[in-house]
Length: 336
Image (cartoon, rainbow, N blue to C red):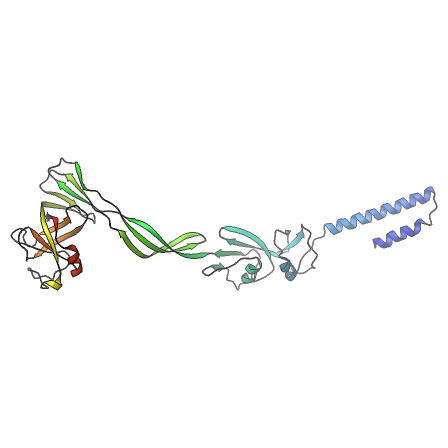
């Protein structure tokens, strides 16, 4: 159209004499043509363009390429960058993706969740979950939430807290203490299976644990004005004792003795054989090493077979008996 207008003006120029009237007519025609050109350019620049689903998807259309105006329950795409005119067709709507705490909004045209994530470059790994379901068709305003799940196996070194045994000593002033053995933490290697969701730990399962260094029990004397004293066991129980004896200890097992005690019970861990003239049968005792690094724990004197200041401690296997051998121990005679 504009071409035809300019062509007519050009053809008429030759007919106009070089007179004032001719010049005025020529100027008016050129002004009219310029106004038409300006109006045409303005219309083209501000023209709204919509894109079909196929063409927009192939171009990777997102909200970064266009500003979106709300029109009739959908969004019309207004071009803000130089993008080829790819035709007209279906209108688009926004869909938001939340992944690892980051929220991004894209434009969508009725795709499934799976197709949409593939087009927008999201990669799902084993263990990841998505809502809505991957085969769901997206609608205006949908929010896609990706839950990233990872499982790692790690091995760490952990401390084993030492136990503390208190010996209440009436020869010390009440409240005074004297360290016999300094407690030392042990060490162990622990292997865990750790589950992370979106980068945060949500569960931890212990797979294995290996002791690399045993803990040394702390032994502390504490002043007491009572007869005998009190001892705190490893489980936190406080027991009163009436006497401390230093004796020699050995170990035995059902494999190398009769399987019944002097009082008619079946021997088990905690069964102790004594000389009934030194420690009466039925006496409850606590047995610990001289340096406090090891303790047998609480035992019940139910068997005989030793003579003098000796105790024979029941172990669960002959191997444990051989490892224990013969050693000096403290025996605390526990009160009721």
